[in-house]
Image (tube, rainbow, N blue to C red; front, side, top):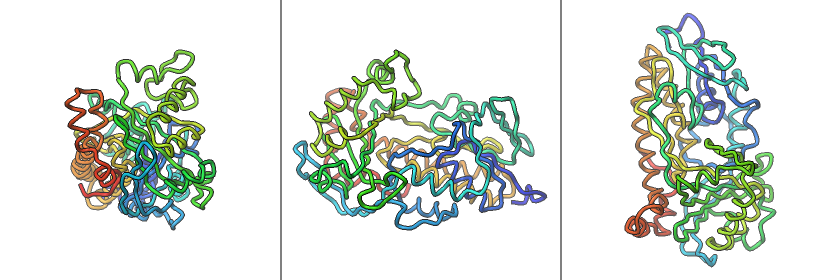
Length: 407
């Protein structure tokens, strides 16, 4: 960068989750002073959602300066689809490494050499001729050469810059949870623990795979099994009910897991027993704290606004069927740093970055919509459901879900 060669260039990254940490680490390694502004009061430790890795993700870890080995995740070699009775409907050989959000956060945060600030709620951002500014809730203003908005799918920065770019509810939710492998019965452990497993009852889909356990351990006996269960949920009445806690408060932006009503959890566990293969029913029943997330699509027309860039889920949200959320954010970070190194000004670099990653973002969202079409059809006509069912074979689901592909 020669635009700011008279001084060390400075970047502020809004959002200290995985996408923000990828960008922050890569910028630091490329000569930038970096500050991360995270809105939560404490660092984002302790989250345990499963993450599917792809070769591009490992490339990004290396670019971020993260030294990793085989303990980065749990290695599997095969996929299996179970019938309602728990027998195999088919299997495929597909080596993959599965990791956990907490494991990725741990390695990325330890590698970061800049400043990570918590309780920094950003209320506005502005781009000027020779700098950008970030204004916090306390009224303070912070100046940088570059601002990266990596503040997630409900990004405050995106809402300011693109108020018309809203989340689109897909018509279903995903229940998620983790269970320690030692809690599983021997039969269930033997049937699914070392595999990427699926079950496809009518109108439903559940999948599961092993991830790191407590303390990010990937040692046998210390791992967890992660499940994701998609269920059709009407937006007008069913979803608001699920988002309402026992006191009657509705958490429109997502209910904390500990506030999900006991009757909602009981209904979910009952449905698991009735609908799912017994192995998955056991996983669901033994999960200590299930949670759910409404499934959304999000696209944006651009990701650059002068000296401000959108990154990760702040720009594009793809349904989790493709398993590319973290890899997409890491790819954004790599493209951003590459553009900054190849252009003479921040503004032209961000325009090039935007042109590349908007195209990629649209492609991956469309692919995820394709993978989720079956679930979205469940609240439509009988004809739509029949057409969607026709293409939902175990072979197709195992072949297409959470696999790396070029866009």
